[in-house]
Image 1 (tube, rainbow, N blue to C red):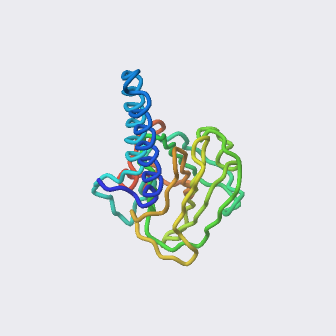
Image 2 (image 1 turned 120 degrees about the vertical axis):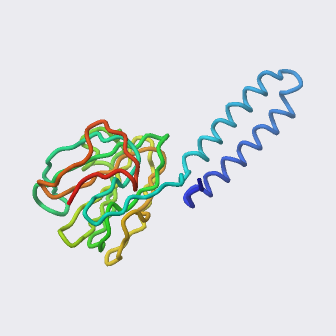
Image 3 (image 1 turned 180 degrees about the vertical axis):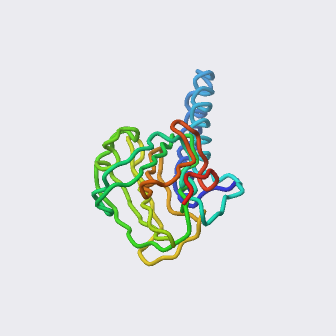
Length: 218
């Protein structure tokens, strides 16, 4: 397991806060109320370990297959339905959405290899990520990857806790399946818009792994 680069600053700040709080607690509280000092230590240690865990990148054998779309994120499948995409395709698409809890790995990966032909950030609200309106009303970043058989859109969506979306892709860039697409801090959702009729390999409420679980066959 390694730590993602997006976490360096957050982890450093958390460790400094942990150290300062516990030094003050030890100096001013531990002598008169030792149990309170220990409680503060346990709570702040738990928070520090959670922040470190949030930015983890576990060692995995990534799935690579040019005929498959791989899940771009860890989490649970919460939507599989046909929708009308007004942003890019201007027509029907098959949407598969993955909800990411704060406990999930939060690095996002390219679901297939191809060329980035669209990349757009949208300001918006911070509705809870499982709200259907979050796909079109929340802060989000959409990218479209063109592959030999067509195009898919991947949408990173901010949630009630997620306040920062990081996307690494630019128009014209060639991307490899499984390489990093971006990162969303502190829980959110990723939508994948596929051509109608695509064979979906996941089910509602299925727990998936980014870069590993096969989302669809193309």
